Figure 1 (cartoon, rainbow, N blue to C red):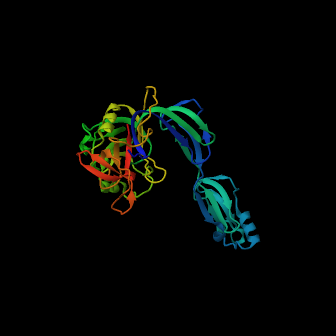
Figure 2: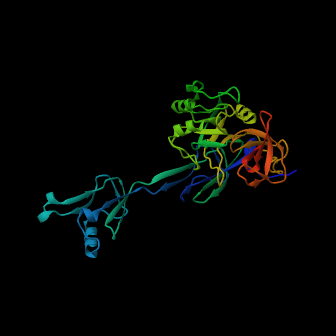
Figure 3: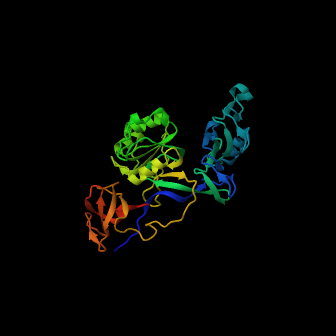
Length: 381
């Protein structure tokens, strides 16, 4: 029987999760190797350079910057030095007025609080930088620091249950899982979102309605997990179409994770049952998704107190076989859970008139459909 490697989504009660927590610029690492950390613990910090603000002093004082002597005269008008901190309204430069009368003097005051950065000898522009922006890197997951990257960050490891979704929006968050759906095919509606859902990661069944999404933001939910959402509802909520960009940086009050796809899609039974087991437990979630090169999946991580037992999944042991659980990730069966019925070894021609390797998948309703192997993902059990 043929086999193929296909990237899979993990839905597992016990695995080792490692997270590299790296600063965007070099900075200070605040923890040591072997140290135990909590999700909101600060593990590293740095400062991003402040935004520059420019002022054309040459134009203000009517100096010709093409003449070296006038550049020198411009420098002499400064009453501040490079690297000096200033506050909004502080005097930066001054030119005496007619007959030396103070009333006619030309004065330039700082438009912002910041640091004097530079005076260009080519343009006569004075640059002031706003105060540096502090960047704190949190651990994100509870666990142990297993490696320190000097001046950059750390690697945190934990034993955890891990559920990967197929799509998400919103960044990293931490909260208590609260399952409000009674079955994996129940639609998450606005009336199911109550004040008790504040700061919770609310778990629905199939569809997350637009009204439920808005209500969750109003109530103050940390996140929402559901099977699917109508694409136009998500676009309306965000205010724009995501396209193929990396998600996770949206300016929204909650993190949304879809386990199956777009539309009213029943959440996989295994996924729903596992979330029910985790009900009331604290979880780290991240909606960041990248479907193209460098695949990144939205995730739900629930720290496990039990020791991790190394086991090989069917993915590691040779890929797909008959009855392997898969998820179809392209139309017209996007998001549907199926099992492998057969894996014909020969190439077959598909609708695009290309010849590819295919498989026959048995859908939930018992029907068998032909799907290119590149259009499915294994579900790790």
